[in-house]
Image (tube, rainbow, N blue to C red; front, side):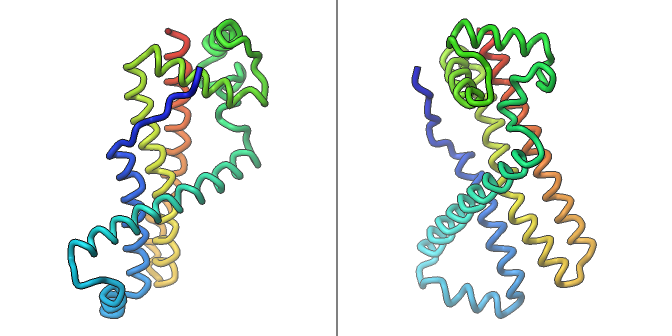
Length: 209
């Protein structure tokens, strides 16, 4: 069974575009006022439509950079203090599915894929269960895509939020800095929540089909 690859979706594009736009706006705040406008004017062309296309490409690319950095940072934090969510979801003592449901999932994993749950098998089991659920439960596919897109958006926006925090902090705007920092922390916890909800959706759909 090969893992299904998601088709390109417009809201996935926005999940990378918006963080890039926020980053460019934060950079413009660093320059401030007329100096910022002059800098953008020097970088732009005489064609407004070409400027728009270049701006979108640049913002989208920056969004991918934040996504890459975020995955490295969050993965490091998770593995340093906690186990990987894909391992915890299969642990009857830690899984948000509850011990009874988790044991049922593990029994179906063993009978369907002939695999025993272990740290080394956590990711292969996840991929097989996700593919199985997508192939046998079409309704689950849409819900998984929503969770995944929102999760990527939260991950990518955490970087620009920290940029705003430092910019406001350096300019003495304490209230705005606190709000930006709170937003970054909130985005991180929302990312974790969406990661857990996506995993629950996958394994519940796998169990019921």
